[in-house]
Image 1 (cartoon, rainbow, N blue to C red):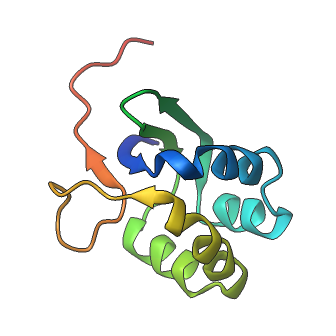
Image 2: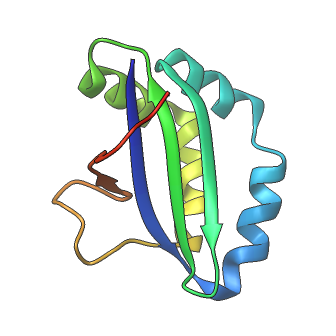
Length: 109
């Protein structure tokens, strides 16, 4: 299992929309997340900075393949088309990232 964290901005005028969407995530999207070996997934919001932090645990063995499977899923693509306009990616993210991945510097069980 690998713990993963990522961060992204959110458009201030889209916060309520984003919260509403995530209060009722589409079941097909949740199933795809699970199928791609992602567990214990949470998203946190920090206002007034309008930053979102995501934490999840990856239980698979091929992150690239699982991410490709998720990206190819039509229902996930529809979900992203609704959610992505709410988000504001960080300028410092790496090429190919939407949410900027973070380095884990401390963990205590």
